Image (cartoon, rainbow, N blue to C red):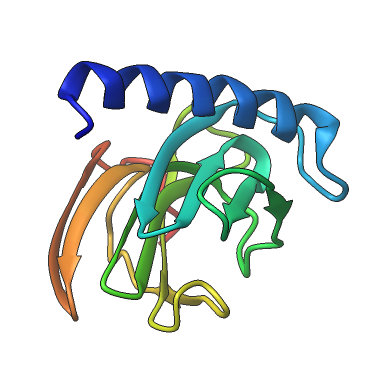
Length: 147
């Protein structure tokens, strides 16, 4: 049985490994900090800055980079029940650092393809939780989105 402490240590160790991977150990990976990780069975996801998206289908033994449909700065990933959700943002030119528009990508096929989901008027997103098409997101208020 994995205790909460062991799970935290494992997630931290995988996060350090994935951060190094995103820095250039996996061919095609975008350099950037890992912001979040999630797992659905043996499939693990890591997302981060500069469009960094990594997937492992063997419980973290090997990783490969995938190219997202929108090269956002991803802050959060949620995986479960064959669905994968990624949350983040794109900067708006001419505005202060961190200002931007929210980005949501969803996969209904275990991460084989992703579709953008409208974030509406949301600013930069830090995360969310969805069940099918119903959910909630959280992030910055949007004062920089183009009209």
